[in-house]
Image (tube, rainbow, N blue to C red; front, side):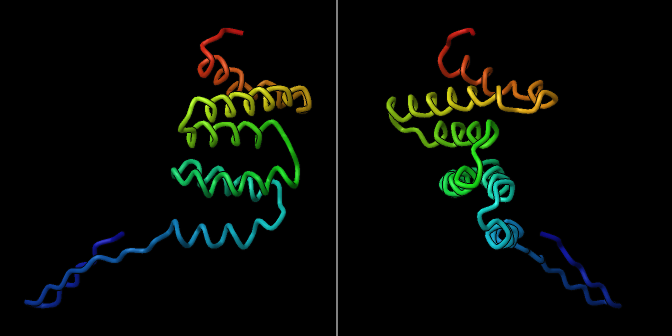
Amino acid sequence: SAKVILHWEKIMVGFTVKVDTDAILLKDIEKSMVNSYRGAYSAATFAFNKGMYDKAKNWIEISLAAKKSYWNMLLKAKIYKQLAKTKAEAQQAIKLLQEANMLIKDLPENSKQYATEGPQLLEEWTGKKK
């Protein structure tokens, strides 16, 4: 939002301009991501970071349908962990995280060094050191 103040001689008028940029961005994302691995992954990441976990869950499934990778499986695990309300649901998130970590081997050699979050989260979520 922005505050606008118009001042002219002895008259001053102020008002606030608000734009729902998240809603505009979400609409653009939905239009652009049709069966796109990266587009849907980016949309899911955006939604996850904004706390829109149900939207993130839907979009990560679109990404996974196009291509399964460490990165989108990692995000799926994180989404499921956020949505978990029971011990069984938390266990499901751990299983997804384990599956994501199994995909590290498929990453290009120069990308493997960046795939540290999954193993770290697994230790955190299970309380077990690797």
